[in-house]
Length: 82
Image (cartoon, rainbow, N blue to C red; front, side, top):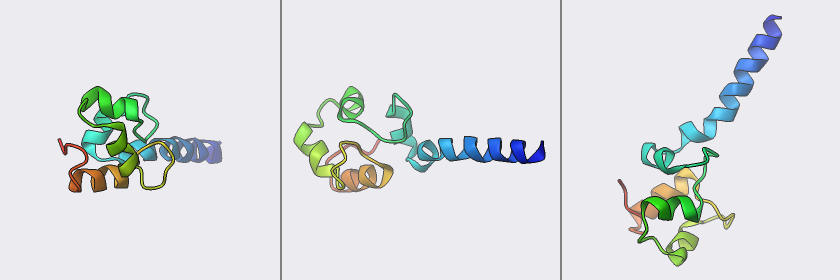
């Protein structure tokens, strides 16, 4: 029974890590809580962010922004930082 509790705790922690890894402001706009930001989620909060800016910020080209990409985009002035 102890192993089951340990596994359950580990699994729950692993599933929550993407949200914890994202910056505080990014977590606030992650509407579906999947740990990454889609263009729609970004534009819902920052309507001035264009698709071109989003694509430029999407360094790995997966169609979503991870925390490091959000931070880099904010530092580059592609996204507001707050």
